[in-house]
Length: 197
Image (tube, rainbow, N blue to C red; front, top):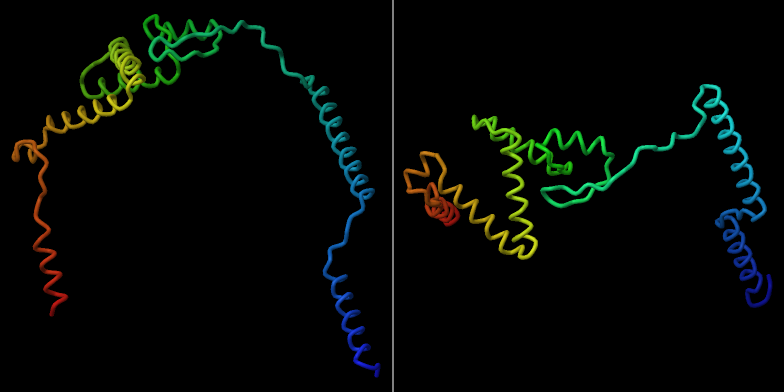
């Protein structure tokens, strides 16, 4: 044995160093990494050239055709949003919506309004639905953009007005006010009595 336990300490240090080497991952050299990237780039280039050759043989040519139609900016007559459209598309929208150009969002809202009114037996045409939607957009642009709190208050007032005009017999029996169907006090008292027993 070595004096003062030097041999044991040296053996422990050598064992610790051996474990440290086993746990560290193998390092990849920069040269190996560059070689792998080069091989990958070569394979991708081969696959791309093969694909282009197949497209040429099929008659595709590999390039998209250039857009030759003019594009113009059209402003929605309801909300004021600008969209880039071809003149042919603008003409088709104007034909569908009584000579007015409306964006896709407003067109969906007008169609929904016409369906809702027509489905309820109102017989509202696209022209009438467009007038209703344009009036709503105009009111929003005048009031809602300038004062959003006032617009939210107005919407809440409309909800309460519709609620008060409801055709439900339950509402008419109580004069249209909001009432609860029964008291919860008996149920609470029953629970308290059950706990106290």
